[in-house]
Image (cartoon, rainbow, N blue to C red; front, side, top):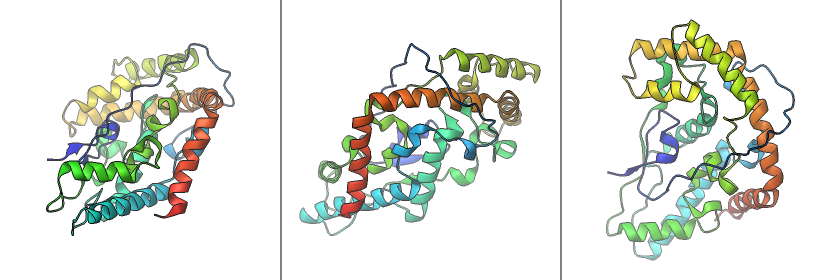
Length: 283
């Protein structure tokens, strides 16, 4: 059985099975001072969420290209060692695009800051998410005559020019950015204030929860088809929209993003350049 793609499975309903390593990045350090925030926009759906850090992250199409190129490199390495079979990072090619889309979207729909924000599927599926996004994306079987050590060596060789020197699909998240990405603004007083309003709203609707992240985590521990978790998720989304929690969260987090970008500008430019060069070289 291949191991779980742990870095992203926690934030999305999809189960990503991959043969290899990939330890989770340690959480970024929290910033003590509070940066000045810009305009606070009303946000009612995930497509409205835009952050300064986004320009450094590869798009879905770029991620697909990165995975395809890395897979090409892995198999070239395996052939050089005598393998007549190919290995696939994601066994079902039809699932590759969906897998990457779900991972990328989960940065917003299951955020490390505001928690659950899957507006589209909430009334039908609650916190558990749509079954159409829950397909298992497994790596291909180990080619005949190839050891796991050989495969690991070829993956390492193919990723030497990638940031983090890991499987390309991991580049979908913020945690692989230099310094583990922007610090999460959960302790910021401006964000804490709107969380208090959200908490009061949830209490009025019959749910006594500490914060949005606790609401998401506690609900996923139970039965995913439980009607109560769907009712709770609907209330969660409604309270977030009524209090503009995500709008304020984005404004606050964007201020931390900007400070992070200033601090890591050189590393971020190199990070992006590595990605762009990997695609341009079309190995």
